[in-house]
Amino acid sequence: MGLLTNLRESISGLFSESEPKRIGIYGPPNAGKTTLANRIARDWTGDAVGPESHIPHETRRARRKENVEIERNGKTVTIDIVDTPGVTTKVDYKEFLDHDMEKNDAVKRSREATEGVAEAMHWLREDVEGVIYVLDSTTDPFTQVNTMLIGIIESQDLPVLIFANKTDLEESDVKRIADAFPQHETVPLSALEGENMDEVYAKIAEYFG
Amino acid sequence: MPEATTPEDGDDGVRIDLISGARMEGLASMEKIRLILDSVRDGDIVVLEEGLSPEEESRLIEVTMTEISPDDFTGIEIETYPKPDSGGGSFLGRIMGKDETAKKLTVIGPANQIQTLHKDENLITALVSRK
Ligand SMILES: Nc1nc2c(ncn2[C@@H]2O[C@H](COP(=O)(O)OP(=O)(O)O)[C@@H](O)[C@H]2O)c(=O)[nH]1
Ligand SMILES: [Mg+2]
Image (cartoon, rainbow over all chains, first blue to last red):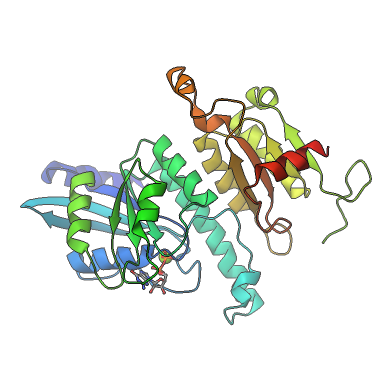
């Protein structure tokens, strides 16, 4: 964090009633994190955060959208959204070769992916003030990475919301997610179709306002 | 499968490093992570009697990411198992203020050799008792 950024933050802090909270969007690859970040950014600022893709690790660096003002029940909350790469414990460039990529590109992409994951872990310990944990509700939430990440988030004492995404798909099972993490609130949504966004914004305002 | 890492006992099975809670207790976080990654990068499976704290797990992921390199090291698989004998999650454990997350048997191995470490306690017990 540069001096200028700090300065700007402290100046804007003088004028707004509260500083924007930095909210990290975490979760496994392909859960719909970028789709969600883009929808939130488009709904409230008019432009997007970054490209969405069915290719894992499309988001290789944490991307930030600052000063997203969300209005709910006459109250305005301002957040910075940080879209992160899906956290994983392994990256093999060979997986990218299946997506019609040359070896050089695949190696470069996997290197960026590993840097992005390392960065996202660092952000989680140092820089985020709240977490939206996005899961694909058509898949089994009981994975080692999910359990580990939720444990890490809990140990940081950060407010966390679990988003059960892709409710537009027939195989979506929101209850399975709610049962997996009963200690947290689970909000169902389809980031792609925009289903249940009212509740999504109400919860964001309630948890991170 | 690379033949470079011949286990010390000379057989070509998997080598398992069982690290006791007492051994880990005396180490700083980064020393623990180094110990784990050095073994895993040699192709070994590491079994931690008492696991890592969430903070250490987060650093383990971060350091693992920085060490991944093409055709050499693709990362780790990690699984945790509640300890059957430790009263993990028990009422007593809670009121004693024990950090439950740090008391879990944890198995870590090289991702390219272990496709998935199956969550099967008997299997892990069998693997460990082979040593
Ligand atoms: N059906 C459906 N697909 C979705 C939804 N959200 C995201 N996706 C798709 O899932 C894939 C991964 O999305 P992306 O946002 O890039 O995931 P990320 O890796 O978590 O950032 C893309 O093909 C998206 O179009 C959703 O709510 N419903
Ligand atoms: Mg993404």
